[in-house]
Image (cartoon, rainbow, N blue to C red; front, side, top):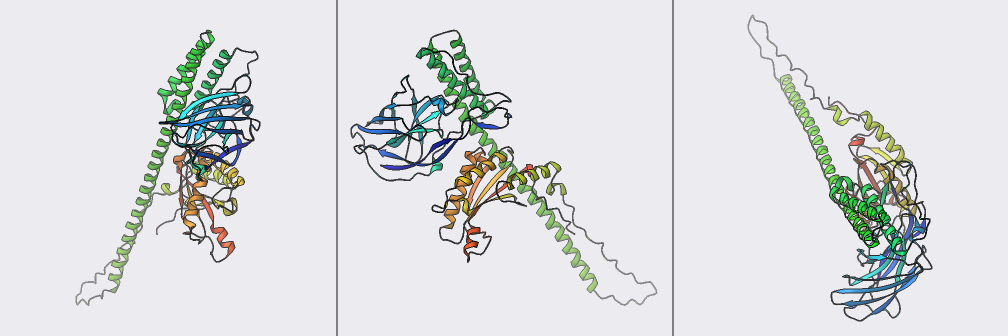
Length: 512
C-alpha cells in the first residue's frame, strides 16, 4: 500500500454564475477551498487474481459509496466499479455536468479512466482498464468528460480493505506533481455562461444527448478562453463545426446516438485545442521573455561600454595633464617670445542615452499602481531589481518549513490576479533561509511552493522561475533568533518592460 498525497475540495466559496466581467478577466467556473488529504494507492500483483477495493465519499459527497473489483491481467489492469448515492454534479455548480474516474500514480500522474454516468437512481457502473500497475483512484466533478487533468472537486476516493490483495509500501508524492484542472472561462459583459435548466422531463436517450451537447459547449467555451482560437485554430474550428453539427442534428430530431457521437467528438477536439493552445502560448511567452532578456543584456552592455570609454578618456587626459605639469620649461636665449604649451581642453564623458534608463510616463504610472496594489497584499519594496515582494517565514508551516499556510495562499492568489493582467511582467522567485545546513534545499522547496501557487492561480508558467539561494543574502545576523527568522523568506522579484528598469526614487547621473 502506498500513501499518495492529493488535495480534496472541502468547501465551495464561489458561485457558478458570474456577471459583468470584462473579456480580459478569466474567471474560474467554480472555486473551492482545498486541504491536503492522503489517498492510498496499491501496487496490484501481476496476474495475482481479482481483489476488492472500496470507495467512500469525501466531505463534498459524504453519503456516496461504492466498490470496485480490480484484477491485474497480462498487459493491463481491469477495473469494474459500482458507485451509489451520486448526486447530480450540478450541485457543485451548474457548469459541472459529469463525473470522471481517475487513476493517480504514486508519482502524482493522473490518468482519465472514463466518464461516470449516473442513472435515475443515482447509481453508476463503469468498467475500464489501465496500463498503470500501482495507483489510487478518485472521482471528480468536471465540466466535460474528456478533461486531461482533474478538477479540485474530488467527491469520492478509494479506500483499501483489509482483504485487498497487493504490495503494501509507503511513498509520499509531492502535491505539485499532481496537476490541477485549469478550466476557466472569459465571461462576456453582462452574460452568464450557465445553461438554462430544462423544465420538462425527457427520455433518457434525449437527456443523454442534451447533456453531451452541454458538455461540448463547455469544452469549446473553455478552449476559447484559453486562446485556442488564436493558438490552435485548426483544432478549435473543427470543434466548433462538430458542435454545430451536433446542435443541428438535435434540432432536427435525428437519432440521439448520432448527436452524442458528434458532441463527444466536439468535446474531445476542444480539449485537444485547449492543451495545444496552452503549450503554444507558453512557448510564445518564453520567446518573448528571452527576447526581453537579450535586449536587457545588450542595453546593459552598451551602457557599460560607454562608461568604460568615458573613464578611459578621462584617465588619459589626466595622465597627459600630469606629464605637462611635471615637464620643466627650458631656458631660451632668444629675442623671440616664449611659446607656452596650452593645456588640453577638459575632457567630458560621452553622453549616455538617458531614455534607456529613465521611466516613461506610462511606465512610472504602471509601476506606481502595481507598487500600491502589491503593498496592500504583502510587504513590497521598489528597487532597481524590480518590485520585490517578501513572503516572510511565519507564512510557512513551522513543521515542514516549505508548505504555505492558507493565509499565504490567499495573498499569493491576489498577487497572481494582479500580475497576470500585465503579460510582459516576469517573476523571479528567490528562496532564502538562515545558516542551517539544509538551508539551500529548503530555500529551493520554498521558492517552488510559491511558484506553484502563482501558476495555479493564473500566472503563465513561462513567466515565473524559482531558485533557492540558501543563506547567501542574509538581511540580519544569524546569531539571534529574530535575525534568523528575518532571513528565512521568499522574495518575488517582479520586473518587465511595462514598469521600466529603474525604481521610482532613482534617477540617472552624469558621469562627469
